[in-house]
Image (cartoon, each protein chain N blue to C red):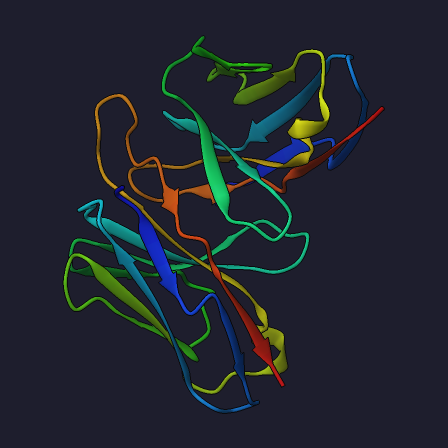
Length: 109
Length: 115
């Protein structure tokens, strides 16, 4: 059974500093997704990573994938309040996705 | 704009009273999903349709059923809602694209309250 774990579960970030979220998964997979969820809202797709060594960047967020280590990271550069949300990674095979536990980010001044 | 629409956005039902949630999409995606999400938890996949093929998760209670009458619409039926079924229900769609395979697009969700 595929298990996807994220850490930390909660991250209190100071504005302007850099942080990293980790996503580990238990079985081989050829794709990794990152989603963002604001409180009371639905999920929004951020990144799709398809190969070992893939790196995607959007604004202050950068995601990378190491399929050999079964690890993806989401790096936040110079955190700002707008990034406060819960971030989920997900992986799987074909059309089915298993989500990680989620990491709640809170940016403080 | 192409999108995933869920109705209603908020649903209140009584314990044991059947309820149906609906999802429609204008993306023409062939895969549709239903997730249940409880507070501070990850979305939990209930089932998904790959075209007309229904795929039920092993741990989805029999109380939950689904219908997909055509490509655009999918319904979630809860036959006898219990208090534990109160949650946000998320519909999502996907399709196989070369550079973003099975990236899921989520609707706004339906928040179900059971009284």
